[in-house]
Amino acid sequence: MVVDVKRMQVCLEGRQARELARRAAAEHTTRSQLVRDALDAYLGKGDETEALQRFRDAVDAVAGVAPYLPERATYVRRLRAPSR
Image (cartoon, rainbow, N blue to C red; front, top):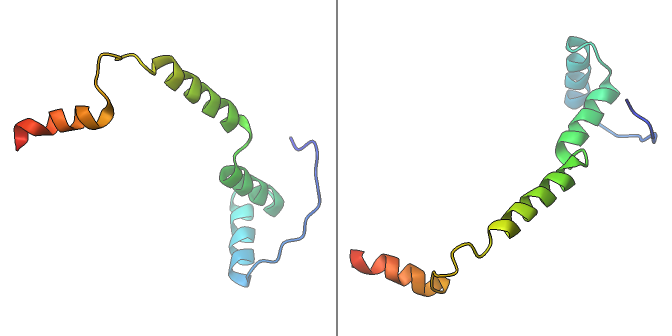
């Protein structure tokens, strides 16, 4: 359901216009709806912000769970030392 609609004019190449019309007919929808769906897929629907925040919260929750490990460069050198 589209609540706040803004009219916009977009110029398409002939190939794009034909393919858009073909797909709209095949999916029994409008060209406008296909364009809105494509924009949602490209720009995100807004819920990605919540997902990103949950991801950041999860990272923050596990940050520092291994404080006994040395600083990164030292840790990597120690890991690589036996193979030399």
